[in-house]
Image (tube, rainbow over all chains, first blue to last red; front, side):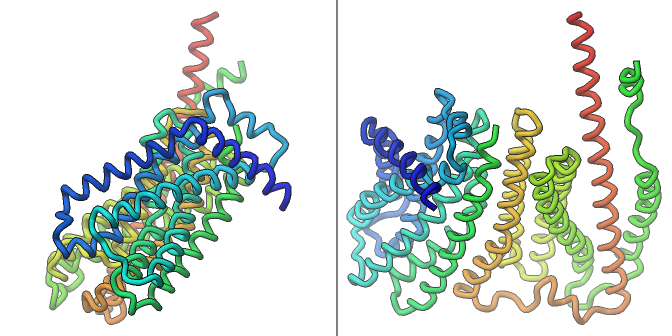
Length: 229
Length: 244
């Protein structure tokens, strides 16, 4: 366990540190998500009360697009000095590379969500019902992002082998992420708009937990085949 | 010299393949006869119901093809034999064709049976997602890199895609049950129980014929892949000659 976790933390730390120095990925993701919110305000009139029901979907559209933007960079930056080879020859498990990259990407996406979602609520004048629903919303966002980023990290590594990886990643990722997107949007809708159906939000969260576990483990197990040269 | 002789002889399609082609052609003709002339017209839906035979046959084959992709992807990851990679790749291509048939015949039938072209019902949505997953799979296969790497990446994607399909089905079913409790009276499969014997026979015969078509296409595809490898070898040899 220690052999798996320690190199992963080192890799994640390296990514986070380089991001702290350059502030390239998170800044771009934030600007992009703000632009999506602005585009939404053109597409759906924010003063119209019926737009409320679209907010849960908007949260996840922002997350998906911003995350894809960040995931694309995650492995292509490693190619500049042939770092992928370094990962392969380093005396660490391939799963640690996956875990490390996953942690870094997860933190990037969470930072973007922490800023973009309140901004969305603010600009669309959306009042969250209660403290309770905020509590559940945080849980759902955590689970949904976990699933999306774990599949995303895996497929980003897979598509980074191609010359046109930026185009390949969304094509691979969106169909595979369908279950977690459906579950996350449904659960968010229930939590934000009608809290009475909380029990079905719970079963959506269970589905997300199952999805997260399956794909996280599949990513850990299969990553060595992706990394192999 | 020995190798030269190996290169001039093109790989031949196997005897089994020729026999299968000989069986499949009449079988398809008989299936067409059974479907359009022999089997009775359904009382409620009319002639449109006849699409059902091909629709279900293709759907069954599409899922079979993707099952084959998953199994041979796992086998390839374990043994790294090129033939497994070829089988998985060819099967995915045929599977996409059958899924396209399902997705075009389905709405034609649905327009007259449910009065809508499309409906976000679990089976339909799952099929669409499956279609996109395997289009992605083929996109990976068409990347420009050496076959070992390509085979490995696509095999990994084949495994992940196969894991995903049941989860998609479950999630779409839950999603549906919360939004539209009852959408239509009978699905494609539910109507299978109370079928006229002659219809049932036609149905089984068509499904078997479609499976035969799948097998023949499979063999053909593998044969073409072998020819491709052969051509690549010949080209390499020619280039060697030109250089020397």
